[in-house]
Image 1 (cartoon, rainbow, N blue to C red):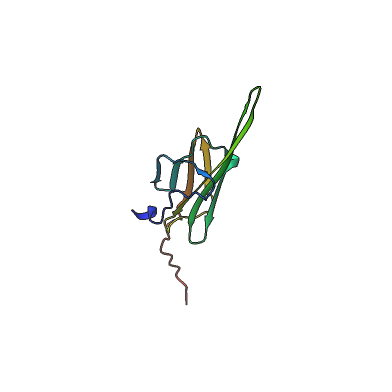
Image 2: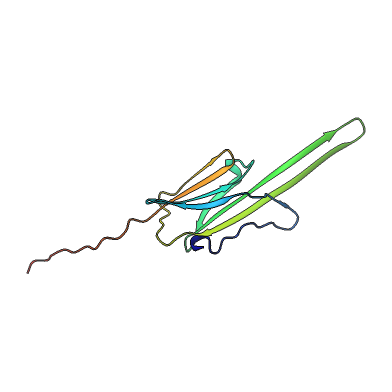
Length: 127
């Protein structure tokens, strides 16, 4: 399970509907951890990405949809708010400096670089 430990898949407050999520995943390569999740229909300004204390990646969003229906006798307007919240505990070898995110065609990709591995440092001090 590793970095998926503590993953909060979905949170939906009372009085609102929730955005249903499809696939999500965490990929690793030699330089970064890449978190990918589906956010169908979401726009960039409706999504917020933060890194909280203890390296917890928090992805949240909200959108309001309205449907207006007019005919000769009735006028009806329906509005709904959809919210979501997802959290992932990042591995200890990540650094949030240089983190970046891209939302493209309903797929959010968050790339968080790995810290450079510490190399033994030895310096000879002459007497």
